[in-house]
Length: 75
Image (tube, rainbow, N blue to C red; front, top):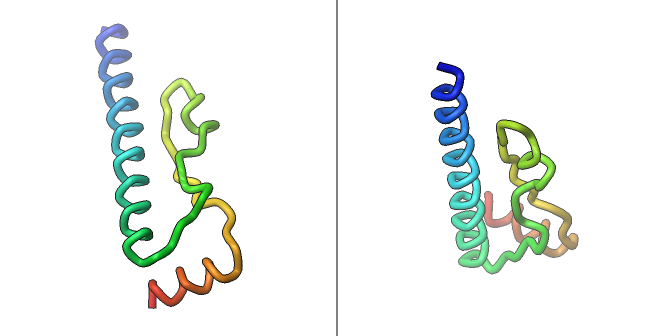
């Protein structure tokens, strides 16, 4: 039973990572369409190092100009 649960947990974790990667790419493309590039956009590697990964998206730093364009795009 434990092996089955571990297998299901591993599959769930893999799906979470896959979803996070797809979401980051979708966000990157949407921002690019608005003329915005967040160079540090990605998945936080520390959140992938857990036994059961639960990825967090890192938006990262950007210039004041990019932050202003991002705020304008969200309005």
